[in-house]
Length: 143
Image 1 (tube, one colour):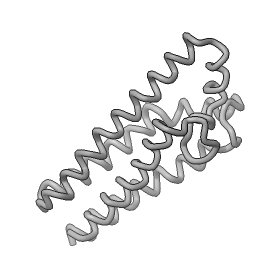
Image 2 (cartoon, one colour):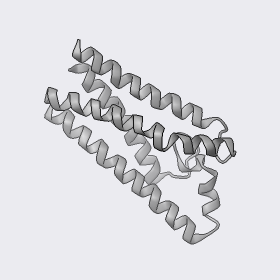
Image 3 (cartoon, helix red, strand yellow):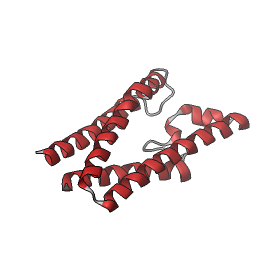
C-alpha cells in the first residue's frame, strides 16, 4: 500500500503547485503557467476576453483543487480498497487528457501559440510519467 501512498502524495504535490501558480502567479514563465500560452497575453488586450480567460483559468484550478482534496482525503482515510480505486480512477482521468486536451495543445504548439516551442511534447512526457508512476504503484500493490 505504501507504493499507492507515495504515488498519490507525489501527484498531489505536483498538482497543488500547479494550482497555486494558476491562482496566484498566472504570469509565471515556468511550469504549466498561463504565460506559456500566447493567448493569455493576447487576452489582456481586451478586458472582456481577459475576464473570460481568467474565469476559465480559475475554474480549471478549482476543479483540480477538488480532485487534489479528494486524494488527500483518500490518504487520510488510509483504506486500501479506496486507495487502490482512487489510483485506478486517477489513471483513467489522466488518460482522458490525451483524448480531450492534448490534441489542442499540440495544435497550439504547431501554430506557435505556446512558449517555449515544443512544450506540448514536454507536457506529454510529464503526463505519461504520471500514468507510468500510478501504473507501477498499482502493479507493486497488486503483486
